Length: 291
Image 1 (cartoon, rainbow, N blue to C red):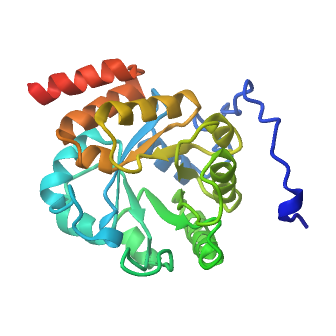
Image 2 (tube, rainbow, N blue to C red):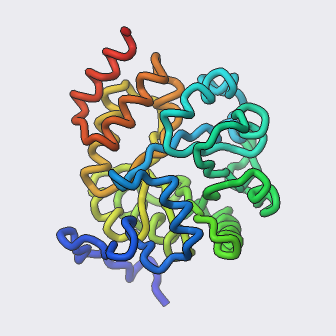
């Protein structure tokens, strides 16, 4: 068995050889079930092959943090500009209109908050995911966290079993472990562990060398927006990730904490789907903000 002294960095990622998408336009999905392909095609734009997901699941950890005080006022008006909404069941049921037809990526693990030890999570009922008509389900993996790594991987594997049972894709969300450097080697490992355990989508963080993270993960990768950045920096982050092969973003704080959230949502969408450069996207943002 491998140990830490015998892990050799991969050096043959075939960066110039794209994954086979001859049977379906998203990598890793050639032999997926009809149901998973159908749901993935709702999340990922069929023309660009990318997605702009709007994440607002932060409240189950942080409560009514800035920009999420009122989901009905702050998030619902942005829904039409997103390809997919990522949230928790309570906020979706209470604050997103049932007439909304955007696909839902349901946060299906829940547990501790920022006030205690993080990542001691458990899964919600699969019946609830079906009842909310989830297009995808998401759970976190705490790779590199000695206390909760095994628990979160077990949760995720169970969720994949449920997803396979009902043909619902599962997104692995890579939490940042405590004991590993936050670099391409770490995020590459965390993303690969998600895929090895059956993820259809992986959400992780952009870092230098991100092209190797993407190449080593056989399913679509989307990036987390992370902490709030100035708008141009956030757009540059999205652009660099896309250039490295990411197939979209799952962005939260960099949208709903923006000085002009709707303008920022539209600018991110144009960059992801229409191949705008960051300078063009920030110009669009400023024009919309000042309109």
